[in-house]
Image 1 (tube, rainbow, N blue to C red):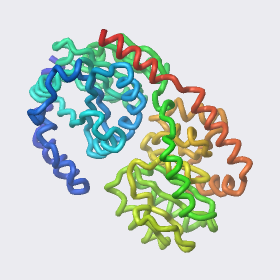
Image 2 (tube, one colour):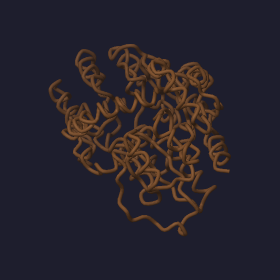
Image 3 (cartoon, rainbow, N blue to C red):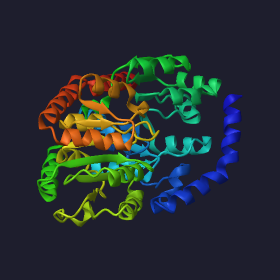
Image 4 (cartoon, rainbow, N blue to C red):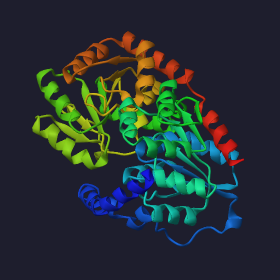
Amino acid sequence: MARFLYNLALLALLPYVWLHLFLRSRKQPEYLQHLGERFGRYPSARPSPREAEGVIWLHAVSVGETRAAAPLVAALKASHPGHRILLTHMTPTGRHASEELFADSVERAYLPYDYPFAVRRFLAHFRPTAGVIMETEIWPNLVAACKAGGIPLLLANARLSEKSARRYARFPRLTRAALQGLAAIAAQTEQDAARLRALGAARVEVLGNVKFDLLPPPEQLALGETLRRRMGPRPVLLAASTREGEEALLFAALVQRPLGEALLVVVPRHPQRFDEVAALAAKAGFGLQRRSEGAPVAATTQVLLGDSMGELFAYYASCDVAFVGGSLLDYGSQNLIEPCAVGKPVLIGRSTYNFSHAAEQALACGAAQQIGTAEGLLEAAAALLADPAARGRMGEAGREFAARHRGATARNLEIISRAMR
């Protein structure tokens, strides 16, 4: 009955789905591409069955999950060389990240919305041997269809914040049935596992966070050196993966508290906001350059806009101090593990529910400092920019912190292979 009511609600929302895609396309026209895939319609041509032993399917909703999937994709290719790898996404930015990371070495498509007819078409077309959903995406019809078709579906690198747990708890029967239909759940932390079990999950193991296994690619570190040469000898504060509203706060604080000769590099989380952030910097009166210009940064430039995709490790490698966005306002923070892995001192805001365990550990070991406001961020950054020894201590603590927690990919690979057997 719970899933019946859920499906009635989905049908009622169908007109809104089209409106949602149209509205999103006004900023990202790519939302109107591959529309058929959103409802389980895919190109008919596929490799013949004899060309592969089967399809291992990973779902990574957007950029963060796609990047997190990279070590797992590599491990699956190495351990199951006869299988094709299918990556599915829900956003164009996730799909674009997949193209940059994996090129033609994987297949990619949009996962359809959770309509029964669309899910059936998806499974019939790709016929996956096993499915792996990264982090937190629980779709009742998808889970039920996989279970009915004998396709083991797992939740890997699973995290569940208190906020998300309260949302799922509003629909207890639907959530319990979906969680119990999964073949296995690999939780990041004991806290995540406890919340999942409280919602009804039966097969939960705590295996750690695969994002610790994301190593800085050498080519990105080399690009970071190139970017730093273009910036010149000035101190560099990076505001990475910033979210809507955070840049305005940062620019307003910078007007009141300039950082002297230091350069502020701002890399918005979403590419559709590049022009918006450039306009905000200009309105605040800052001299602005764009990374896409590829030119040396002028001495009069106060803000460098990182208007590029797939270069986050390079930006981290090029800076002196890194602020991780999504934490100044209530977005739950972006990935603070990456700057730690590069050995940079990290500043984070109060909102860290997406990385609560990692944030607590990074703060405890001295790899990160927590700030509450944009003014506090600039004050902490100025102190670190003036203290090379403190930056060195924090950077080394970050490297040790990241290295200490690696190994989750191998553990997740084991439960996937177990489910396939």
